[in-house]
Image 1 (tube, rainbow, N blue to C red):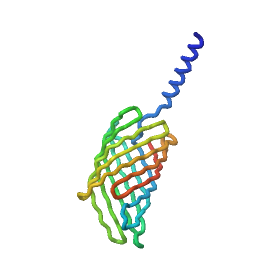
Image 2 (cartoon, rainbow, N blue to C red):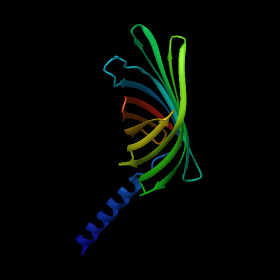
Image 3 (cartoon, rainbow, N blue to C red):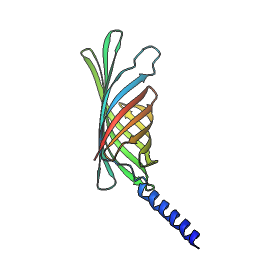
Image 4 (cartoon, rainbow, N blue to C red):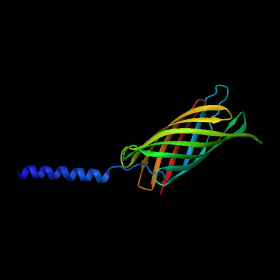
Length: 194
């Protein structure tokens, strides 16, 4: 009987220990900065720009997502500096599918500008996004998203994936990769959560 009591106590202690370290749902309140590298899929041009990105997100109440992002990358094409700037503002909704996983949908305003020397063109449109974010462990988060972007009657589908290592509750580092019809993007990020 003593042996059974000891085993039961050890099992209860280990379950309590696991529960106290179990991951919580992803944090939607953050700002982050990124190094961004892109590759344009065009056989006629060798354009592989790099630059920076910034993003932020917050929750209104417990489920409504409000956020924005901006990136600027540049490279030389035949000796001409070409800059590509993209911006997004979005409103969405998150659903806690499990204690550690959120499914979300967003509607976004999209802005894009291409600048070469002193000439520039810009346009805007909208995006529809569907994704998932999950805390696999208290320190490791994975995310995936599919987006349909429509700018000036040109449409694109973007598939993206990201992983973040949470050093503590406030600071994390991450890697991301996005694929679309015309451009592939890689990013390395530092995130401050609040």
